[in-house]
Length: 160
Image (cartoon, rainbow, N blue to C red):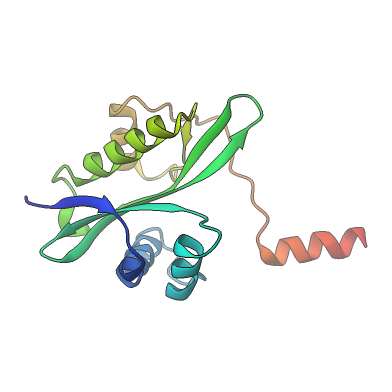
């Protein structure tokens, strides 16, 4: 399989958004995507860049992506978070996921981060197996905690 991994450009965000939607559908959350193409363009390429993105391209089509952003660990110091690593269904099993993860790890090393972290759904055994085969520690004794926008508003109303 011939593909190229490169740093995403602003004009790639429409296809990146399509991949995000494809992942949401795979994760049975097709209506959960709130971010728009315009948001991705502004947040990734605007004055205050919020993320860094790699894309995989084959025949002038984006067939995979990995999106990371900086975090700070009180235990480790600078880290990056891998928000999503997405490979289109037809490209799974071609080595593309490994190539994208390789780029993320090289990028983290270049930045001097002390950890790269991400989440994986507990039912996504193929992804869990993939990450473990790369040496990642899948910490099954931790739960993800989130406050969505509605939860934030409810929280603030409760303390007002």
